Amino acid sequence: MSACNEMMLPERLKLKLGQHDLFDRVMALDGEVFRDVPGRKTIRVIIDEQPYFIKQHFGVGWSEIFKNLLAFKIPIVSASTEKLAIEKLGEIGIPTTPLAGFGARGCSPASRQSFLITRDLGDIISLETLADAWLINPPQARFKRQLLLAVAGLAANLHDSGLNHRDFYICHICLDKPALVDGEIRLYLIDLHRVGIRETIRPRDRMKDMAALYFSAMNAGLTVRDYLRFLQHYRQKPLKQIFKEEFQFWQQVQQRAIKLYIKLHRVEPTLAQIGAKLGANH
Image 1: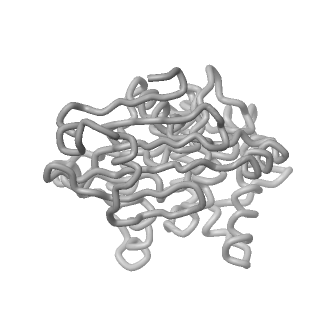
Image 2 (image 1 turned 60 degrees about the vertical axis):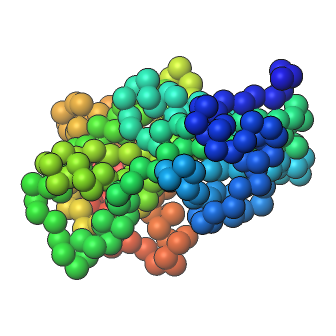
């Protein structure tokens, strides 16, 4: 296998898919389509009576690469970004979709093909779906507090380890429902194909992640106390110290979140939705 080609598949999957032309066989698999965008498709398949998700990357083309570079963005040209993110999350103790296979073919970044196979997480619910249900049936205060602190801990671990998600919305944080029956709040971070990995997270990357999280939680019925509790747990500092040292940063987070809300909903969020307006005279 050349330096540009990679293949990682367990023997049981090789036996089910066939020993020859494995890469082509995986790229040709059909299943329930969860996402289908230019150059990339996500499907759910059953192999050997086990459910898997397969992300197939077919090549992005030079135009997409140049468009990203001109916008000062790192182009995502293969599934290797998500593979590395899964491995890194495993190292720092953040549960995610378990890696079951990976393959890549081709040296050119524009035409490089790849796939990522992950095991289905089973009975989970996204925090976005959960928050939507809260509009009709508000959660118990204790459960909401525990969940809020769990999300804050996940975010802190992610960012303090040098990672930024780049799509850090609550729809990409999922709750394990069977674990919840046993009294455990177990969260999974998913959709990792754009994750950035560095020794230390850049302030702007942290700000964008937190703004996305803030924006996506605006309709969850959070109170000012909820927001402050989250902030204190995320930063592990007294609130007075946070606002003294980081006020401008959190003001940027809120301003960006409000802009995202207006862009999507064509209306400004209410004061209740944002918790409290951070002004220059706070």
